[in-house]
Length: 431
Image (spheres, rainbow, N blue to C red):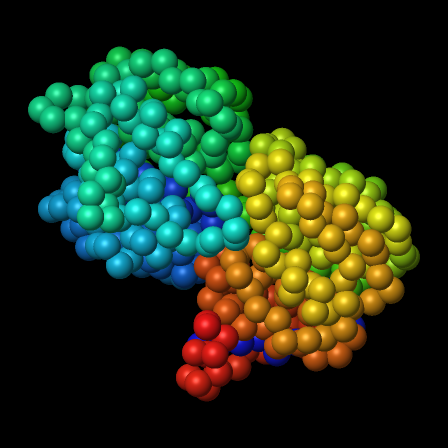
């Protein structure tokens, strides 16, 4: 097991290049199963979730060819199985996208119940199942697998109204419907940038999807998808994480390879807090020299403030003057990391979905543990800003979604390194 050693208290200066979007990549790679031919996907982030997605596809019979570090060619013309590897599928939440893609092309799917981060709340897939059933599939859970099938017929287009705005369900239903007979309309759809990216990927392969990025998506079913090339969008949350790191530590960083419009919801809150942000065509210059100011934040579906930035922004607010309120409006609970921040001297009280954050003068380095991907990123930010030395364990969660985080931070002047933990220490931390 690996841990991060951080000597905090240093402002960040320099430039950081943002990788491809994790949340887009882990949907677009499964969506390649819908393509009867070779598709070339560029700007793929080098993260463990992506590696796992590619291995799962390979196990189903896909040909995977790495062109370079961020480009792969996927050939799904010889898929020999619609049952995924149990151990690999259960390690990653995004494995549920394999249901929509396999069902959409082959009329059946057997996918292990998804895993990934557990940050204290249940993330049900009832809206996914509702959508598949509306399209004509039978769905059941047996032996740890989700079974979905449509028998000898094609899925049939229909109107589907999502009871809650769900990113995962929107994308999964979109994949299932792309080759269904007739027209499918998804209402109350999520609008996140990675939903638009998935639709653009599918359209570039021959799909007919309109309205992605609005709350109504219309999908005209097609007979088949052909091969092609596509580049994944930059990662909104990775960019926001580095912006938050500058806010917490001070300094000045040019965040490169981003779509500024995607960052508006994050930028607006950082500016309220006293952070300077200068927008250019595909970069943001982020600077913080003065004191951080309190603000109130509620996470909401896009274009609201993203839930995946909640732990990072709460960490920054723990260093702001005054009392801030952070309300989680997407997931039931996402505050397991708060106890770790308290070890560092943060003054945060959680009541159900709301955190009351009383700003402190500084945080102090401590041994801390990541519980999930974004909480882990928040603890890295805390350690960078803290006085003294911190050790962060369970960093495999962080590496699920952040490419080269150590080298990127070191290039900005951070004193951070990774170190292998002895097996005995790892076992103690897991327990």
